[in-house]
Image (tube, rainbow, N blue to C red):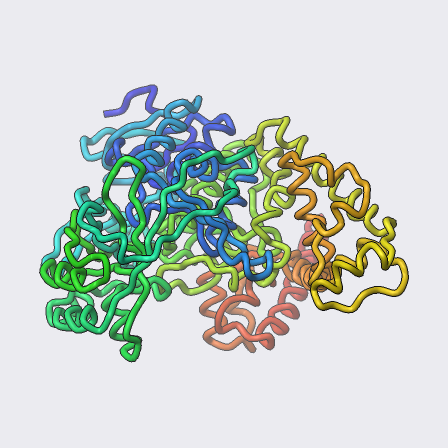
Length: 637
């Protein structure tokens, strides 16, 4: 069955965080878009922890917002606690995190989709992709309906052959309480794709009425919380606290008693789980000498008594989960509302996709989110955005939207996916970004809003404000080099902090190089309009100027490294380049280069197993190839 109006520019399969951003980006760029989801009521559902952001993840959300994504605005509207993490460290690793009202967040994102022009939403299960001559032309649903689209984006999350485990009990599900997607993996494998199996998990949820909060350590949000979205002027929110507790020797003993019935240790689970977010049973097994592990009790929402026990992800049997919980301070009488469980699901190693997230085997088909082996709402959301944007750009035969490693954490994420061998769920960390001093969460708008503006995804007045902000920062930075401070003005401040005073006048610029001084120390010492204005932009300007001055030397070194990086990235490798003709390449390098097919020398150099010597050989071979290609062109002419 085919209906004439069921012809779209972009079809997005899956209503999770990747699917929502993909559909919104495509529709906002003018594409007629269809979002197909198995359950409209669970659009943008937070399957695991009710939070957005965190270490490095907060960077991704800020970058997504700067480009015109929705996640930052959605969490600002529905967050119930906001905290800036790592404030005791340098600004490169500051990361915003917010607890969300789980239900409100889902409703907020659904509202954005339903109110967005060019989007249709349909509740169906896709069972097959329509393929013509190695090109995806649409989808087929479980009812046999055929829906045609010029581009298709698959954001299946954990639903592909999803299998839930609680103890030795297993059942098919995309997540607890929802159907798994059966058959689509097999169809993709039949088209030549390689698939793999990964595992993730979630902790039990607790009835807050059964918790003794007095036995726990309370954790409040920030007094003056920072929003995720650069377009949010101010957060006025009544924040709800979280609570800290920890396991003990008795807890560990009970958990170990269930290892014989653990799907993880019995071999029942074959998928590889996230190394950096292990289950509680993995933690006590791997770190057997530790007598306790921290746990965080996080509210699921503003109007519910249900709590999420962060740090206690488990797939142990129900009786073991309950007994172990009741040994934890504050949880002695705790009642479980939802059991913890593990889930295995299919993914497709992302060496099979291009930097645009279009698949190499089938044109007009894009993969985004956990199907690419990633873990986390934020990693999924930015992939969905990139896929949605590139799908529309390709429809209009425009240049693809690709951010490199020097421009954004989004660039780092995608480059890692298409270059590395992903054997466990990929999670973003600040340590993965070699240029992290420049890729801070506080300057994401300055780095990326120009792209969002060019794509037509940002309000015009906001893009103009960012341009103005850049100009003011540069002007203030230069002016501070000219404003001089006398010893009598600044020495009292320095002596109070047990630091050596100055003997002659120095510029504010030079004084700010000293770690013990901050820009606010000069508030009452000099007259400048930027000190007297407290608008959000001026506060951000002062923050940027101080960071730029204090870390100027480090920034210059990173910029020099980026220039070298660009030279490698700007050396493209022809798509038809034949690696089999390079006799001196190692066999491992040749196989990986053929499989990944890097688009540049820079990407080739980051492939595990490809040595600097291999790159030197490759450069020589490329030069010969390019010379021969030019010769043949001249001969034809």
